[in-house]
Length: 421
Image (tube, rainbow, N blue to C red; front, side):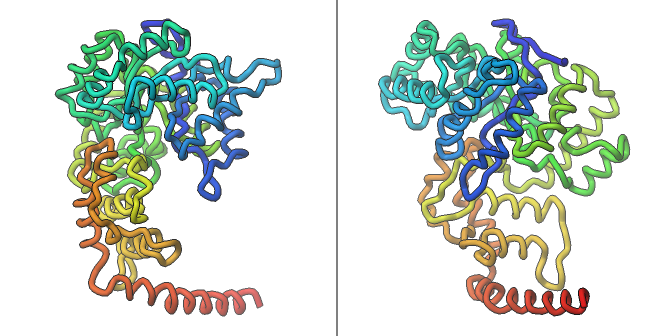
C-alpha cells in the first residue's frame, strides 16, 4: 500500500488521514453509529492516522474517538494500536502553564490512551505562540514528551506566510499542519513555507484539502470545462487530492470525511496517486483552475466553524457559503428570485429553520478574533446582508414561510393526488 515516511521517526503513514472535525451528525450531535462504521472501515482498510482536537464537535470528538479506539478488531488487537493518534492543545483557552497540563491530562483521559502520537498546538500564528512561550509552552511540550505523554510536537498554522519561517525556526518542531489546496497555494504558510519545512525534515500535514467542500462536487462551469478537457470521468475530489499528493513535500492529507462513500473515494485516490505523477497538462489545467477560483471567490471562508456559536445566532459559514456560491456558479432562478436568494431564505433566513441570517450580527467581534483565516467577519456579514436582505426582508420571510410555502405544499398534494389516482 502507498505509504509516506515521517523522516524524524520513521513512521509509515497512509497518505490520507481521517480528520474528526466533520464527523456525521444527528440532532446536533455526533451520529455515533454512522461515524463508528466508517471510522472502523477506514482503519481496517489502511488509514492509520486519525486527527481530532479538544474543541471539535463541542468537545465530543475526543471522547467519541476514545471509545471507538478502545474497541478490538477480529484478532483481538485494539484499534488504538493500529493508528497514530493526533490531537491539539486549545491555544486560545490557555491562560497559564498549569492550563497546559490540565488540558493534556484531560485529553489523555477522554481519548483513553497513555500517550498521544502527534500533539499540535492548535490554531496559532507567531504572536499567539510567543504569548504561550512566555507562559512556558516549550518547557511544557518537552516535559510532556520526556514523560511519554506525547511523542511528536507540532502546531497547526493560521498566520501569514512571512511569519511561518520564523516560527519554524523558534523550536525543534517535528511536524506542522497547514491549510493547502490548489485554490490556496499562497495562503497562510504557502508553498514556500511548506518547502522550507520539508527541507528541515519537518513532516507536513495538510488540512482543508477541499477548502471546506468548495473544491468537491459541483464546480464553476469554467473549472469543470477545464477538467473535462483532460478527463471527463475524473471527479472534482480526485483533481483536488491528486494536486496535493503529487507533491513530495506532503506527508499526509487530513480530510474531514462524513460518510462511508467519502472514505472509499478518498482512500482510492490516496492509494493510487504517486509523487510527481501528474502530467504537465494536468498541472497546467490545475493552475488555470486556481486562477479562476481566485477571480471568482468573494469571501475566503473554509467553513471550519471556529467562529461559532455566534452570540446572536448568525450561521456565519452558511451565510458566506451561499454568498460565494452565487458568484461561483451564477445560477438563474425563477423570475425575480434567484436560486441563491431562495437558498438564503431557506437555510439562514428563517423559512425552514430558525433565523440565522447575516443581518442579526451586532459587530461584537468575537468571531473575528476566532477566525483562522483572519477574516473581518462582521464587515463581510454586512456585505452578505446588503446582497440578500433587501428592503422588507423580514416581511418577505414571513410571507414565504406562512403563505407561499403552505400554498405550494397544498398545490403539490393536489398534483400528487391526480398523479396517483
